[in-house]
Image 1 (cartoon, rainbow, N blue to C red):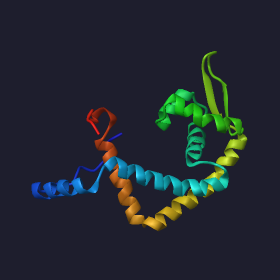
Image 2 (cartoon, helix red, strand yellow):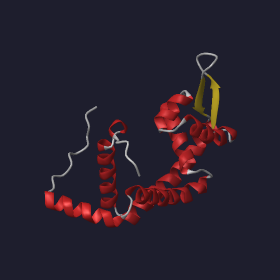
Image 3 (cartoon, rainbow, N blue to C red):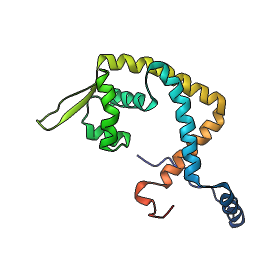
Length: 169
Protein backbone atom coordinates (compact mmCIF):
# COMPACT_ATOMS: atom_id res chain seq x y z
CA UNK A 1 0.00 0.00 0.00
CA UNK A 2 1.52 3.35 -0.99
CA UNK A 3 2.40 5.83 1.72
CA UNK A 4 -0.28 8.53 1.92
CA UNK A 5 1.92 10.79 4.02
CA UNK A 6 2.22 14.18 2.36
CA UNK A 7 5.76 15.43 1.84
CA UNK A 8 6.97 17.90 4.45
CA UNK A 9 6.27 21.51 3.58
CA UNK A 10 9.26 23.42 2.24
CA UNK A 11 10.42 26.17 4.55
CA UNK A 12 13.09 28.76 4.16
CA UNK A 13 16.28 28.43 6.16
CA UNK A 14 15.43 31.62 8.05
CA UNK A 15 11.95 30.45 9.05
CA UNK A 16 13.30 27.04 10.08
CA UNK A 17 15.96 28.72 12.23
CA UNK A 18 13.31 30.93 13.85
CA UNK A 19 11.09 27.92 14.47
CA UNK A 20 13.97 26.00 16.08
CA UNK A 21 14.71 28.98 18.34
CA UNK A 22 11.06 29.16 19.41
CA UNK A 23 11.00 25.41 20.12
CA UNK A 24 13.79 25.87 22.67
CA UNK A 25 11.42 28.01 24.74
CA UNK A 26 8.45 25.62 24.48
CA UNK A 27 9.78 22.68 26.47
CA UNK A 28 9.99 18.98 25.77
CA UNK A 29 7.84 17.65 22.92
CA UNK A 30 7.53 14.27 24.62
CA UNK A 31 6.14 15.82 27.81
CA UNK A 32 3.67 17.97 25.87
CA UNK A 33 2.45 15.00 23.82
CA UNK A 34 2.02 12.88 26.95
CA UNK A 35 0.03 15.67 28.59
CA UNK A 36 -2.25 15.85 25.56
CA UNK A 37 -2.67 12.07 25.45
CA UNK A 38 -3.54 11.97 29.17
CA UNK A 39 -6.12 14.72 28.73
CA UNK A 40 -7.71 13.00 25.71
CA UNK A 41 -7.64 9.65 27.56
CA UNK A 42 -9.42 11.24 30.52
CA UNK A 43 -12.06 12.69 28.18
CA UNK A 44 -12.79 9.29 26.61
CA UNK A 45 -12.49 7.36 29.88
CA UNK A 46 -15.11 9.57 31.57
CA UNK A 47 -17.61 8.69 28.86
CA UNK A 48 -16.57 5.02 28.59
CA UNK A 49 -16.98 4.60 32.36
CA UNK A 50 -20.72 4.92 31.77
CA UNK A 51 -20.46 1.55 30.00
CA UNK A 52 -18.20 0.10 32.71
CA UNK A 53 -15.10 0.08 30.49
CA UNK A 54 -11.86 1.93 30.02
CA UNK A 55 -11.01 3.18 26.56
CA UNK A 56 -8.20 0.62 26.30
CA UNK A 57 -10.67 -2.18 27.05
CA UNK A 58 -13.05 -0.90 24.39
CA UNK A 59 -10.18 -0.85 21.88
CA UNK A 60 -9.30 -4.43 22.76
CA UNK A 61 -12.90 -5.63 22.37
CA UNK A 62 -13.19 -3.78 19.06
CA UNK A 63 -9.95 -5.24 17.71
CA UNK A 64 -11.00 -8.79 18.58
CA UNK A 65 -14.45 -8.19 17.06
CA UNK A 66 -12.94 -6.98 13.78
CA UNK A 67 -10.10 -9.51 13.59
CA UNK A 68 -11.97 -12.59 14.73
CA UNK A 69 -10.44 -15.21 16.99
CA UNK A 70 -6.69 -14.73 17.04
CA UNK A 71 -3.63 -15.80 18.96
CA UNK A 72 -2.54 -13.55 21.84
CA UNK A 73 0.73 -12.78 20.03
CA UNK A 74 -1.15 -11.56 16.98
CA UNK A 75 -3.42 -9.48 19.19
CA UNK A 76 -0.46 -7.92 21.02
CA UNK A 77 1.25 -7.14 17.73
CA UNK A 78 -1.90 -5.64 16.23
CA UNK A 79 -2.48 -3.40 19.24
CA UNK A 80 1.24 -2.56 19.57
CA UNK A 81 1.35 -4.00 23.11
CA UNK A 82 3.89 -6.15 24.90
CA UNK A 83 2.80 -9.66 25.87
CA UNK A 84 2.75 -8.75 29.57
CA UNK A 85 0.64 -5.63 28.96
CA UNK A 86 -1.77 -7.66 26.87
CA UNK A 87 -2.06 -10.29 29.62
CA UNK A 88 -2.91 -7.59 32.21
CA UNK A 89 -5.49 -6.08 29.84
CA UNK A 90 -7.07 -9.42 28.90
CA UNK A 91 -7.59 -10.69 32.45
CA UNK A 92 -10.47 -8.40 33.52
CA UNK A 93 -12.21 -8.87 30.15
CA UNK A 94 -11.94 -12.65 30.41
CA UNK A 95 -13.04 -12.55 34.06
CA UNK A 96 -16.09 -10.47 33.06
CA UNK A 97 -16.98 -13.03 30.40
CA UNK A 98 -16.53 -10.62 27.48
CA UNK A 99 -13.51 -12.42 26.00
CA UNK A 100 -12.56 -16.05 26.16
CA UNK A 101 -9.29 -17.89 25.77
CA UNK A 102 -9.71 -21.23 24.09
CA UNK A 103 -7.43 -23.93 22.73
CA UNK A 104 -5.75 -23.08 19.46
CA UNK A 105 -4.70 -25.29 16.59
CA UNK A 106 -2.13 -27.16 18.70
CA UNK A 107 -1.64 -27.98 22.37
CA UNK A 108 0.55 -24.93 23.01
CA UNK A 109 -1.50 -22.26 21.30
CA UNK A 110 -4.55 -20.34 22.45
CA UNK A 111 -7.12 -18.16 20.75
CA UNK A 112 -8.76 -14.97 22.03
CA UNK A 113 -12.35 -14.50 20.92
CA UNK A 114 -15.27 -12.26 21.74
CA UNK A 115 -18.21 -13.84 23.56
CA UNK A 116 -21.83 -12.90 22.95
CA UNK A 117 -21.72 -10.92 26.20
CA UNK A 118 -18.58 -9.20 24.89
CA UNK A 119 -20.36 -8.25 21.66
CA UNK A 120 -23.20 -6.78 23.70
CA UNK A 121 -20.79 -4.86 25.97
CA UNK A 122 -18.84 -3.55 22.98
CA UNK A 123 -22.07 -2.40 21.29
CA UNK A 124 -23.18 -0.63 24.49
CA UNK A 125 -19.77 1.03 24.78
CA UNK A 126 -19.72 2.03 21.10
CA UNK A 127 -22.43 4.60 21.77
CA UNK A 128 -20.36 6.12 24.59
CA UNK A 129 -17.23 6.12 22.43
CA UNK A 130 -19.20 7.94 19.71
CA UNK A 131 -20.42 10.49 22.27
CA UNK A 132 -16.83 11.09 23.44
CA UNK A 133 -15.60 11.41 19.84
CA UNK A 134 -18.38 13.82 18.87
CA UNK A 135 -17.85 15.96 21.99
CA UNK A 136 -14.12 16.17 21.33
CA UNK A 137 -14.75 17.14 17.70
CA UNK A 138 -17.07 19.93 18.85
CA UNK A 139 -14.79 21.09 21.65
CA UNK A 140 -11.67 21.25 19.49
CA UNK A 141 -13.41 22.02 16.19
CA UNK A 142 -13.55 19.66 13.23
CA UNK A 143 -10.84 21.44 11.23
CA UNK A 144 -8.46 21.34 14.20
CA UNK A 145 -9.13 17.60 14.71
CA UNK A 146 -8.50 16.93 11.01
CA UNK A 147 -5.28 18.96 11.16
CA UNK A 148 -4.23 16.99 14.26
CA UNK A 149 -4.94 13.67 12.49
CA UNK A 150 -2.91 14.82 9.48
CA UNK A 151 0.02 15.90 11.66
CA UNK A 152 -0.05 12.60 13.55
CA UNK A 153 -0.11 10.57 10.32
CA UNK A 154 2.70 12.65 8.85
CA UNK A 155 4.82 12.31 11.99
CA UNK A 156 4.17 8.55 12.19
CA UNK A 157 5.31 8.19 8.58
CA UNK A 158 8.48 10.16 9.26
CA UNK A 159 9.22 8.49 12.60
CA UNK A 160 8.91 4.87 11.60
CA UNK A 161 10.44 2.62 14.31
CA UNK A 162 13.34 1.62 12.06
CA UNK A 163 14.32 5.25 11.54
CA UNK A 164 14.23 6.51 15.14
CA UNK A 165 17.66 7.65 16.29
CA UNK A 166 19.08 6.14 19.45
CA UNK A 167 19.51 9.57 21.03
CA UNK A 168 19.36 10.73 24.60
CA UNK A 169 16.56 12.57 26.38
